[in-house]
Length: 610
Image (tube, rainbow, N blue to C red; front, side):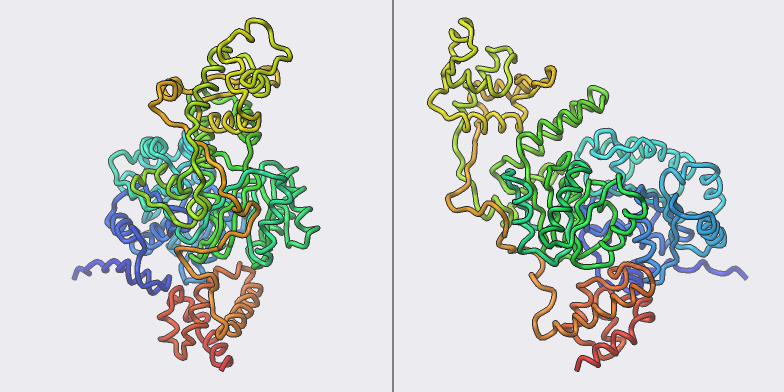
């Protein structure tokens, strides 16, 4: 007698029973159905948008073990801990493990005791790992942070190029490439390099309606930073700075000012970095000042702000990093400080990397696009979403430019004068001398320069105004700076765009802040998504009791508190005050595994609260 094959689990039932949610978000249902059916795809979804479920649920619905490739040990460990809390059989294989842990993971994998296994690309490609996987039933391959495969992206990692071998070695196994940040050119590069040209692309909206975006020019970054943080004391956040020295200095200044601030960068010893990471994951009010290596892949949901004390490397990096705030859906903020010297620093740093010319030009263009967004006059969120291909993105209504629309000034004539002067001078002057030329300053001027039609053409405009316009044209790529023994010289940028300004086909607008606009911090903290506080006053006591229980439970298990329950789940429990296991199971984030493990304890706390 032949036994009928077992029915595959229903993805919606898995979502409810394992993860405790009643419905999928955005394109999740379509992606999951596609992969469960054996399809491969490229998935683009913003940070905090729910990418993990797009491979975790298919791995639980398909026969075999899901193999997840990630470059981030912190992400692997966080996801494995969270999955185990939900009753999913998961393990990781990475360089931070000892031999016994690795052997135990391989034994469980060979015995069919794992639903999901996480590996770094180096571990996957080393030794006989691929041969050993080929002997096992594999449900799918998920390649996380897939933008790392592209040299046109912002975080290229050479080892990712070798992942094309998966298409050759496992042609019948679904492959899912996932990323939170990739423009059109990077997307096509990912598809080509990972052999996904004939497979589907799922592009979710990059809208994060619970995040408010604020950009300010630097005016004493240390004081500005403390002004921003003063009304946010007690909230968890990340502050990014561009160098280890800056990180150490800012962390020390914040700690001296009474903030619970810690430094994190590659120059610290491993034990110190681990301790900082553990405190950030465990406690609710820690501020980590870090280089960009921190936070990537850390699924901490209650980060209330991300501040760039120095600008990131590109729009992709900016959106990914600010997206580490508010993963719980509650109000959060992304704040950026920038200045003209940051642009020069970024371009010089790029030059020192000695990249191939085409890649260097692309990266320089990305840097300028980011500064053009900072200097722009349109909604921050809409500008970035359009950059990622959401052409009809509407204004968010809550970023600094939406809340305080800048006054636009037509500066096309000034721009024409400035571009003409650079052209006539042949790119031989730096910023200061160029402004002197426009204003007719006679010191150190020869007869040939003094006779030019552009000499003194802008003497009625202040030097500060010329500096601002020069910076803006730099940001927009109409002007460029060329290295010259440490004194950069100003030259013309993209010829087509420069000609468009000359002819008047392209208008150049500058902006100035409306009178009285705040300049240091304290946004209105108004959001389209989420409430300002997770609970009202009547439920605060129960919420605090639940958090205290969670903190003790997390300490007992040596896991971050948020892998037990997110704040939002505890807030919903405090608001609804369930009196039975059935009522508790109806709350988002309470799946079957967590109900069995924690249900009685939670209900006891609710009953004790009266």
